[in-house]
Amino acid sequence: MKLFQTGYCVNLERMVLRGGSFKKVSFPALVALMTHPKYGHILFDTGYASHFFTASRSFPYSIYPKMTPIHFQDGDGIKDQLAKEGISSDDISYIFISHFHGDHLGGLLDFPTTTFLCSKKAYEFVKGKKGIDALKNAFLPELLPKDFEQRVIYIDEEKTVSLPEAFSPFKEGWDVFHDGSFFAVDLTGHAIGQLGLFLHDEVRGEVFLCADACWQSQAFRESVLPSKLAYLMMPDIKSFKKNLKKIHELQKQNNNILILPTHCTEIWGKSYEYS
Image (cartoon, rainbow, N blue to C red):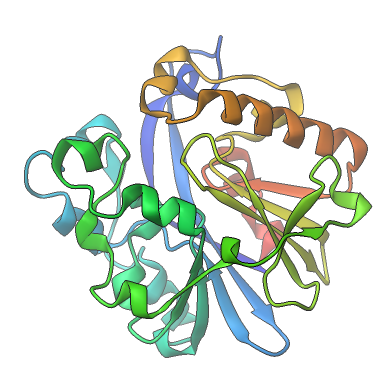
């Protein structure tokens, strides 16, 4: 597994950590590249890309980048970064979409032949949303390929399976490829139908990509909730709190597991360890 930073946004620390400071913090949009022995290269989300700025150029979508100022330079998109690794967009067999916020969908249009994996519950929640209704859910409709529904596999249409004891208190999830290599779990809260992904890395052991179930590692380590202002854009606060508590318990029971929130500054600062 290798992590890539595809730009970052800026906000106050206390927005994501209740009681935190008023200092501005950079929150990276991380993308994980994974390799499956049978299916090859797989991405976990796509972060920001130039398409994000095209999709947010007109009102009301233009409010999105003003609420969370974004820093993105040419070459930051995941397609360009993969090219430097000798990997083309056609080499990516699957993209795992954790949820349908713009900072996770930004690069989908750069992968015209890739199959998407996501929660049907997540997609159905944003499908057809436009204008203010879409903006309230951080969804930019133009970021979805026109043939999205022809290229997607809904993970949650499969039956759930019992998860390994090492992932407790997460008890059930979906065996994505039916071979025990990737297990998806429901992390509804920050977004309806948000999914996290458990996998085994040969170097780091067990890894949990927890998307936006929290934004900083300190949040799950110390069970710190975000500012109440953050709840204004959150569709299911009760589930958010429940899943943050479960991630807190996960790291207490299994401190060998590597838990990776997508926007964690601490993780990005140590990213050399994860490449």
